Length: 255
Image (cartoon, rainbow, N blue to C red; front, side, top):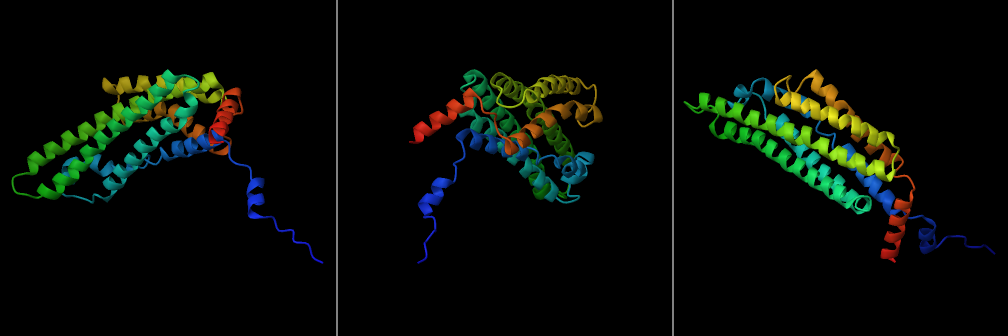
């Protein structure tokens, strides 16, 4: 006589451990932080426009690179907001003020990012509707430079200045809770003031917005956010009284 050793589907499901709520949050936030780096290629995608905005708005070259660049910046903005929102159920237990501040800073960063890319999209409309029209070259070229200047200054406020506030707030939350190794918030505390000093220098014309010095100043913040994202994907949050209580409350609420 043969014995049926097949495990019923219900029993098999019971044997698979469910992911802890805090682990789901860390995984989602890690993925979102990695996604925020998809706009790095815009430095190359926007290069033809920045090198000769007059020629671009009058019809030279293609708009495909600009469209991909704008799309990547929109994705980055939405992912940035999502990082703060997904973290909020946990971070509000550390400091509700700092957690709300992080959400507000991310929201403002994304709003300014959207304003900046609208300037680039406006160039494509003018190029399509008026490029090549008689007597419009000088006016279009001037408008193109104005729109590019608007993009550059708004970029300085959005994707360069606002990360200072975001990373200081996040660094404080991580340092106070110890849910990740302390090296992460320490890098944030070093990188944020360095980036702020660089933004002030760019604002007063000490050096260009896209330069070796500005890249070096932004490097610690980039290292913090990318390494944090990868750590959260691979390892997740440390098990602490905070995460244990969060997981227990989530299980109780789901029961």
